[in-house]
Structure formats: structure tokens, C-alpha cells
Length: 368
Image (cartoon, rainbow, N blue to C red; front, top):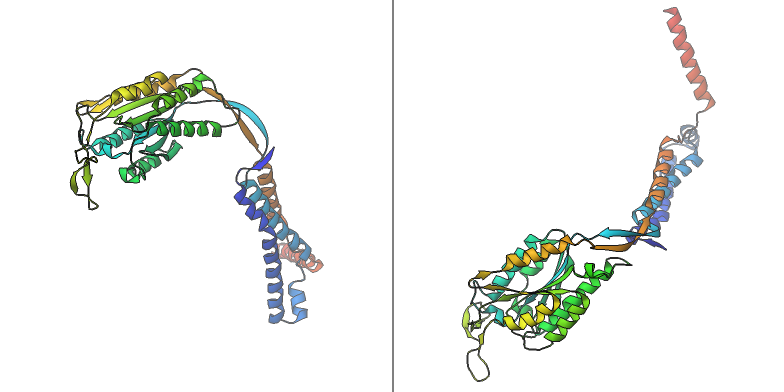
């Protein structure tokens, strides 16, 4: 199989004829300018030692070297080999609840603010792992795909807010299914022939950060799908079981009261660890609390770090053989040849003058 890893550089090859034309026009322009400067006999004497064929060859060497360098930069790859690579980290999709109930202030500064702080701690503890973000409320979407660029993940995290949700509510099942899909896609992109052994699948983890209030159902189905895929779900329950009203804010950011139901009663939200346990435990995960009395996040971090210690965490990937060295070598060779080939021929008069100069030099030394 043949391919170019960076085909954008093929534009340099396509431009080679244009550079050749510019070379030719430049040479013709210089010739016309010289003819305007002097008559034809003087021009013939001035340029008599120039070898136009050699000059043409030198220009052709430069153009061809540029085209070959463009081919090398495009990274031509021909042939494949299968390598066994060792995974050193886990793939972690973090699903963050952005429903309005996360604005409750039973933890400081509020549930959403605490959740973001917990995610910052998770990202700060990762080393060699890939992390991605899923935002969910009444719908779910991928906020950041799996990446080992934790600074980029933090940037995406900073933009996550309840205002991002076009549909309010809490659909935990949809969030888990989307996180599973993101993990599957990342596994496919890891290379052809990637291992599907349980050891590799155990390195894929979903961390669900929510207050556990689910309005749409589908949690049992999501747990079954995660268990079948070998993906552990660990849930971080944000908030307290006593609960608090959900504040509402004006466009200016000032508080205007509390959320009320259709009958006018104030809506109270409380954490639901029981529902989260029914989701996490069947997959081999567990629930961690993050409430007013502290957090159990350290235990979660230890669990994630323990995933790196697997003995069979290897996968087979298909690697394309790089062939750019051949094109780059020929390009350098052409430039070397162009640099040493003279474009002037040595005339008979030059030989006589050179020889005469040597004779006069020897004669003057003899007289001295």
C-alpha cells in the first residue's frame, strides 16, 4: 500500500514547472538587458566563456531538487509492518452534568464550580493518559475529544456552563452512551489490528460527575452497554442529600430567585447516590462523594493510576514504512552536483595567459 502522510506538500512538486519557467524567463531577461547595454560583438566576448547547456543543467538540477524535497516533505510511505506497542496510560472520558440543578449551592462555590475543580484535579494527576470531555443535560455532546494535551482540555472545561445546554434536563444514559462511542472511535483510530483483549478494554474508563438526578431513564441500558464493552464507570456524586433550592439568575448575572415548578412551589434538588451506584457498580466501578464534608477524589485518582500497572496492556498496530529518505537523498545529491559544476568553460587564451603568467613568475624569481 502506498500513501502520502502529508500530501499538502505535493503542491511544491506541482509548482516545479512554474519555477522552471521563471528561471527561463529570468535568463532571457538578463540576456536582453545585456544586449541593450552593449553591441553584439562585445556581448559575445563577455559571455564567450559561458556554457549555456551547463547553465541549463544547473537550473534543472535546482528545480528537480526542489521537487524531490517536496516529495520528501509529503512523507511517501510504502509497505507496512505490524508492531506491538505497550500502552502506558488509560483513556478517560469525563462526563459533566450541566443541568441547572448543578447551580445549587449546597457545596462551595456551587455544584458546577466544585465539579470543575474536581476535574482540574483529575487532569492534574494524569500522566500519559488521554482525557476527553462530554457535556450533558437534556442532551449530550462531546466537548473535547480524547487528548493528552491537558492544557487544551482545561480550555474546553473553562467554557462549560449550564448555558451551553439547548435542552434542559438530565439524561445520564445519553451521556454514558456518547462517552462509550467516543472511546470506541478512539480505539479504532489507534491502528489497524488493535487488540480487543479485556486487558486493553479495562484501560477505558468513564468518569461521571453529576448530582445523580436523572429525568430521562436509560441508566440500566447504559450500564449494560458499558459492562459489555469492558468499560468501567466511576461516578462522582456532587452535592448533599439534604438538598437546596436551585437559584435562578438574570441576564446581568444577579440572582432573581429560585426555580419553581408549575404549581409555583420552589424546586429542591438533592444528590442521588443510589441511582449512581446502580450505574457504576455493575461495570466494576464505584461512587465517590464530593459534598460539604469533603471529597473522596483521592481514591478515584488512585484507581485511575492503578490502571497503568496492567501486565498485558499491549496492542498490535500497523505502521507504514517511511520512504522519504530516498527522495531527500537524491535532492541533496543534486544540490551538491549543482554547486561543484562550473558554468564557464576555460578558453585557449585563458590557458595561454595562465601559462604565460606562470612563466613570467618563474623568470622573475630566477632573475632575483
